[in-house]
Every structure is written in C-alpha cells, then in structure tokens.
Length: 258
Length: 301
Image (tube, rainbow over all chains, first blue to last red):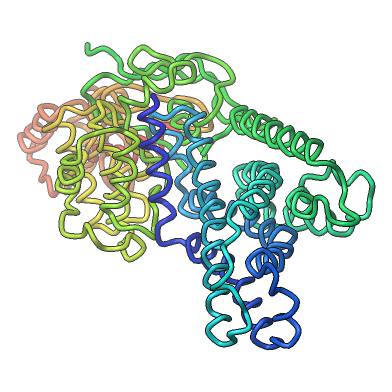
C-alpha cells in the first residue's frame, strides 16, 4: 500500500515534466533576489551603510517581505492550477479514476507534488539570495557579504513560519483546482481572495483569514503586526486540516468522476 | 453458455429529470467481442461509465467478475482496461513516458511497455511527443495503456471514432487479434454499425436508454430474417404470378416480384419453377438485411 502510494506519487511527478511548473518555480524564486540585486547595485551609497552590520539577514528580510505577502501566495495559486490542469487539459481524469488506485491515493499523491514544488521554491529562493549577496559584493567591496556568516538558522525559522502560514492556501487552491474544470475559476477565486486579504489587512479579524497568514507570519513581532505565533500557527494548521478534509470529502462524494 | 463477465441488472440512471437509462439489463459473456450499439445519446457512454465506477449508480445492480465496481472498485479495475470517449493521454509527454506513468500505477513489469507498444504497432514511435501523433496513433496508444496490466476485460468506447478508413480497419483487426490471440473479453461501443457487425460475436442495441435487442449476431439476423426479400425480374409478370401464387407470398414493387426470403433453397426452387414454366428470369437477388438495416428497423420500431 505504502509502496503503491510512492509509485503513484512518482508517476504524478512525471506528469509535470515538460509543463511550465518547473520554470514558474525557478522564475518566481529568482524574481525578487534579482530585483534586490538591481536595487543594491543602483544605490550603494544608501544600502552599504544600511546593511553593513548584518547583511545576510537584512537582504533576506528585503526579499522575503514581498515573497511572503505577494509572490508566494500568487505562486501557490498558479502552481496548483498548472499541476491539476495537466489532467483536465489532457482529458485524463477518467483514465486516472479507472486505474486501480484508491481515491485517497489519487488525491494525496498529487497534493504532495504541489508541496514539493513549494518546498523547491523555498530552496531555490534561498540559493538565489546567497547568489544575490555574493553578486553585489563582486561589484562593490563595501557590501560585506563575504565577511559575514550566512544567517541560516534565523532564516530557517522565518521560512518555516511562512510555510506554515501558506499551508491553508495550498489546500484551498488544490481543492478549487481539482473541483473546477475551468482553470480561470480556481485562478480567479484564488486571486480575488488574496486581493481581498490585502485590502483587509487592517481588520482586527485578519488573523482568521488564511490568504494573509504567510504575510502575518513573516511580520510577526514587527511594529503593527497582528496575532501571536501560537494563535497564527493554530489557525493555519486548523485551516489546512479543514480544507484538506473538506476538499477530499467533496472530491470523494462527487457523483461523476473523470 | 459462457459465464457473464459483466452483469447489468435493471439499471436506471437519470441526469436531473432526464432519464438516460431506463431499466437496462445486459449480460456480457466471457471471451466474447460484445458490440454495444446505439445512436449518439442512446446511453452507451453512461452505461460504460457506470460499469467503471466513474458514475455513481442510482438504481439496479452492476457486477464485473462477480464484484460491484462501486464497493469493490480496486479489485474490479485490476482486471479491466478502458478507453472512454477520446484518448486519455498526456500530450506533452512521449508514448513511452505515458506508458511509464500508468505502468507505475498498475505496478507491472517494465517489459510490458515494449510488449503493448508492439501489440498496438507503436514500437517505432516511443520517443515522439504524443501531441505530434495522428488521431489513430493516439487511439492506439490509449489502447496500449488499457492493455498494460494485461486485463481480462477491455472496455472500448467508440474506438474508431474520428479515424480514417485505414485506422478503422487497423483498430478492427487489433480488436479481433486481442480476442483470438489473447483471449480478452472486449466490450466495444459504437454507432458505426457497418464496423461493429464485422467484428462482434454478441450484440446489444440501445436506443433512448432502453435495450432493444440482446443476443448473438446470428440471433439478431434470424430475428429479423422475415424482413429480407427475394427480388425477381422476369419477362412475363402475369405468368410468373400465376406460377407462384398460392405457394409464396407475393408483392410487386417497381415492376419486380418480391417474395419474403426464407432460405437459399427457396430461392433456387423459385428460379426452377419459373424456368420450368418458360418464364425468363433476368435477375433474381436476395436483399438480405445487414446490421445497418436491422438497426434502423429496430430503433424505428
């Protein structure tokens, strides 16, 4: 049973070969480090004194404030669409559902692929952050990235929090992508919910709005931040569990499959 | 009588208020090539989807190999290969990659990929992207996927749909070959009547959600043999009528004698009687119903 699930998960990875999933992940991860390289190269007079005491962590925060609020939620919405649409576009759901696979297997093997791409995105953005630091050091010796230790532990804590924050969105978007044949539905609903969250950022109940959890997790402890780590983690995990349960139940109960 | 591989018993299905299947029952014997014939919208695909568990059953019972495809889904699907409507294949991948994906799901040996490619005549195209395939090749690849786990039963929904004449012949030959050489039971649905009669051993005709006929092909032809006619063209119609009246039921259509066909011997006897009475027979032909004619007669009541 366990082996079957692993083999089917491997098969799900194969299906993404040659799609835009890998390129989307690479480009999304490279986007903000590249922008920040340009910013640092353009204004060394401002940034050399500003980041000299802890360059890696400050660069990390410069990149991740936009990643957590904008790039990551949009990436999660689109990557879900790409991975699930492979079946709709090729008219293959019926072949999948007539294979000797349990519904649990079909649902979760693809969901693992989505999460692997999200984790791949995190790894890549960390690598691009390192590359960005060394790249600007080559042009301006005032940037002291080479002489400062890479702040892996501090970054890891923040990235883990942000990942916990985005879990709910991965589950909701996965459900929407599985549920609706027309990709514009899941894409449109996802983007609308995310934009609504941005507009509601000052709302005191925003800690119950999953599309903003990654952003709230990132800004925890900053002036004006909302909620506590325990409350946000509890909400994020509860939302994730509920969306996975309801999504799976909904797909399972569909009267027509494929 | 071979045991049925598929038993559909008093199954009805509706989409909203529209009744799509109305109390249908079908038995598909093991080792048969079973033609499921009906015009578009008759309920063929709905029946096949119910058999495969793609649709939730509303009433009646369905059993494949003695098991309910709803409650015993995995066990049933291990023995079934299916092609429902258009081919289900990943167009951005190669034929080999498509087969590898499903090989992992079916957990069969790697050598099966080469075997099914050879059976379906696709061995030379393994590394070609499927989006560059012709429809016939896509159809054959879909059959290859259905054959990967060497199932006992193949369910093929309109496998010749959209194919050119060559593709139709190739698919027909492949179906025969799979049945004869590998002993597979094959359920093949179609609205292409002329194609199905050349390949099936058994047949069911569905129309507006009802099964109108079920049995072997000879049974169907026998059931409607009264509809076949002997058409005779002679030099002296009045004399011919005098010779044959009282012995056969005659009618005259378009200046030709028409007699209900019973057997070839009857045709020979009629010819001999006319010749014996100096009636010149210019033409004597039997207009036997092919399945296409029978199908039209059956569905038009």
